[in-house]
Image (tube, rainbow, N blue to C red):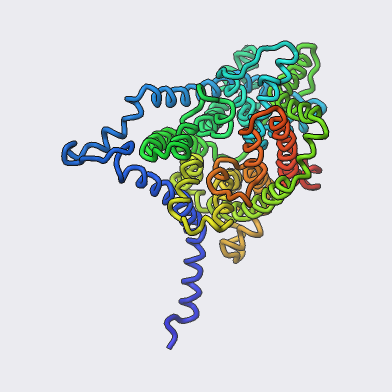
Length: 546
């Protein structure tokens, strides 16, 4: 006798399919992120706080509370926390002051090459953090272009890390501000001007309040990237200006002080979790259909307008392109002996590993990202959960995976899953934003014609959100290609990628090793650009509609 009739089995399958978008990302986050982070904390806290046994009876059971605030009682760790917050806040302020005028020029003026500038603007963001750090060193380090031109050597100062942060994050704010300025109501702006407002007063009273949520959202992202960033802080911060993420890595990998690292990680998660929740709440407010009465762009006519356009392009080139040019320039002058590193067996193996791991991670990240975006469309908490990979330190995740799944460390699947974990939020965020902009009547019309939810999504929603999906996949691919923190923990010698190979050269003394790292950085940079452009490049229809 059958346990279920065919209609009952069909209804059960339909119900299970309805919960699939929720279950798959939730289980993945639980297995790959939450459980490893919890395992590492327990590993550090169970034997005792900071390596000393906990006498719960003597302490009245409050020893864990005292230890939780221990980082704020230690002057060295308190300084690390304070510097991490300060450099993230300073970067947000610099990006806002520099990026907002640039975005206004890009949003209000139409000039030859504007579309190309907007596309090239995102290149620093898709460059691996290790390559970005090398670019800053090639520009402002001891043998950098700035020093050769008579400028100061900024090695050992906080300016290296701050410039690296601005180089890496300025594009985030400029793109967000440019798109939001394009949504300002032309009727409201015209009404303000007709009532006698000057252009500056109209911007201050009409445009700035209208784009404030977008700016807040972008600043939250910049703060997250700077506060929890690892590669830039490890290479550019040095001993004096390393962030709390670098301190966690040092405590775990070199000093095996898991208790101290766990407590620091808890504070990092508290700060980043609060920022991520704020970002998700602000982004939900932005879930409105696109405005129709947008302000039309005009061609620059006066000398002042042309000066603004030229100045905008010059500043973007100086901030966003100079480090990349410095890498190419230094590598081009390295000599044939250094370039021979490309034919080494280790380099070829690292290149193959980078390609295969990144491609596999991208496939997993795409499926996870789409499912999570569909599930999070009507839930703030699920939308917030997209940022969990940003909230929990990659260093903590990598070491937690080793502790929780020791038998899986011989499987490349664990490394690919970790890559996908860090990449799929980009897909989920892009798809969720696109779904927010779709009128609900489209899906309702498909359902009224008999399509089930999956068929309506596949035939109606997916073609409309395809550009956003490709954009998210492009960022996910760039993230996987340049992944560094997790690779330090999970990569075996035969699984070395280009990022780990570059870091190995940086750890060896001598100018030849630095030049070899720059040559490898060129290869990694080209690989990231190729992956990004291949996926994000507009289709023929999109170019025709642009």
